[in-house]
Image: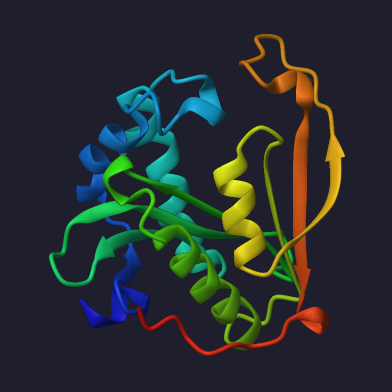
Length: 190
């Protein structure tokens, strides 16, 4: 199992997903509050998770080692908390930072802890030169996590959606961090 673990922080273990994680992902994407700023609260159908999302995640580990989407577990209890991602560009020089956590993990600093660890991993180990992330302008919690992880707001933009969710009218925001601007800090030891 150790070779399947990407990294550990004080409270998190990030490991490869497996085919056995379908139910965990379906449950995560089935929570309307978790999906609020993504789908307006609509769940991701089980078939899409099983037949599209999970196979794409698993294939990504071989395509770009050290990058991809990682299951997040509580280090002490082993409980599935959600996921963190460094979704790579085609050449692997850039990666999109992302995360999705169960509500039970909210408000505890875990999104920041995991994001900071992935920023360090991206620049020190994976050779990424630019990290970026997007969220809805109205998603204040995610914007705060991105700022705490060292990314800075670079633009607000508007995308046309055929079926927009509440808040879409205020646009999307993009954050980024370049390796040349990154300053390593002490690991999160909470």
